[in-house]
Length: 455
Ligand SMILES: *Cc1c(COP(=O)(O)O)cnc(C)c1O
Image (cartoon, rainbow, N blue to C red):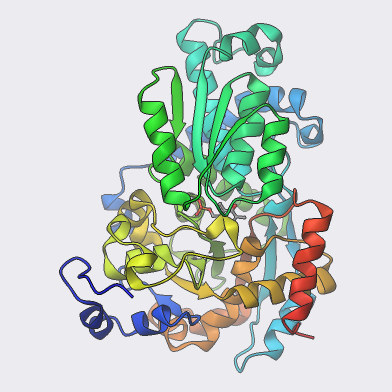
């Protein structure tokens, strides 16, 4: 245990001002309401990004659609737009409700980012977007490409040769490296992925097959990022994709919101004062859930309520927001290990960008034990035939937690939506799993079976 002071206060003092800290330090699952949450009118006053920035990202992805369709045939059905389906998970809702006093009413939907084309995780949004933007900027600057061109030309050898003069680097727990590596290599870039110790072996192998240079570290994610940043600093032709600080990553994720609105419209699903939308987002460093929250707030305003989900061993965003210390604090400072099988979420220190600039848009945050993650993974497979990786099921305990904890219920009262819960939509973001090799998935499933399934 850390006996030093954290921002001038001892652990005991922190525990006194923030009672949840004791439970967090004991590795217990907690649900936290963010007292700094604000209505959009107030919150957006201090956010420098506007909806126009998201629209700009959306337009860029449209320009690239012919290129994406050209090099990734599995995206042709969607005309080169990488987007995931919504699925109602009724069986899962029934089972989750068996465990609690206050049942979840309304509709429980799953956002199937595990099936996103190209990389099978939420990183196909932000990660791929930033690579494409980097490529576009280089090609336009050198006069090789105009915004009105058919971007399918980027798949030609001429462009591959051009991009081979440039490099892209990233630090990753796995999935971000995978997304960036696959697209970066397809464009012709030299790609360096700095992988933390928790990254799965199959992700490293897959990247090496694509011709990506994988640099391995014995340490955790924050160190892998620092090493990547350092490498890029010394090379003017290397672009570093900064998972902790990148606005482009955020905007790539934010595009999900408009597309979700279109999907809701097509289904006749309404989101308004009487029909609140609750979204549960697994959180690692915070870029994915932060960017999606930003987009959702532009589109649905105060009628959407976004909650972040983290492992009990790595609740970095929760601790960062709760203490107000953001990237100045790590889970290790509070005696936690940051060791979890939820490798996409194994992050000890949160993004300062997300916590500081978007914190007032986040309704709350909660934690989930690895054992629960395995149990959920197993149940999702049995009940819904949906196979997710451990990180990707963390959203599933959000709806019951919201309705069955004092903090969650306190939130619903304060927001004046407790009476509207029968007409609510609960959207659980399934963030990955689509590329997990069969034997690895079988091992996850077996582990879930061993940790006493729900039914
Ligand atoms: C990366 C990742 C997340 C979280 O995204 P961050 O941007 O790190 O917060 C969630 N789930 C999976 C499967 C991921 O790979």
